Image 1 (tube, helix red, strand yellow):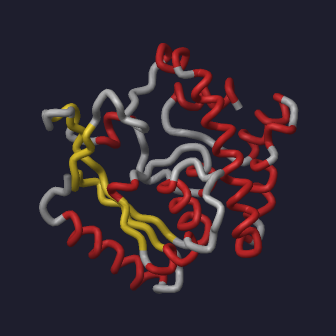
Image 2 (image 1 turned 90 degrees about the vertical axis):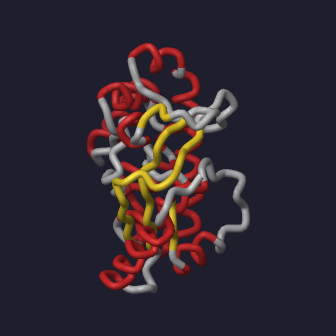
Length: 212
């Protein structure tokens, strides 16, 4: 559920990005949300805070493994939409909002509004929900975390295949990530450290090292 002035504020931010970087660049503006339950009772006034997500962590080395962007809170420009539309086979794309973020991070620009501008409804059947990380949740979701990292590797491989000609020097590091699971465990960890690939929070980074 959108809150008052959500669209106006995001359009203003997107217009600011256009003024600073030009309309030909893929641009993305996103915002925080108020987390609520099935009956719209507030669980947390900030989705970012509740999930310990850093909305500023949108550089390519961060966004390939952790997506701070929720599709319901994202607004994109025509250039980003056009680039997204060039991909015909969507089967390997793990999350469409992260896919948009990858393009904007690598080839354009991303900005955010810290103010919650919509209600994010959390219920028992959420396909992708708000998760608080801890040691116990890391243990419980270990197999899910491993599969998630593998799906993101495939997503990056598709990304490089489709946009590699536009990536320049960034393409080489992404190519290595897209083929990461063919390397041995030590090389995978060294790659993570070398390219400063990380998530937000101690337990997520611990999971990244354990399950990569």
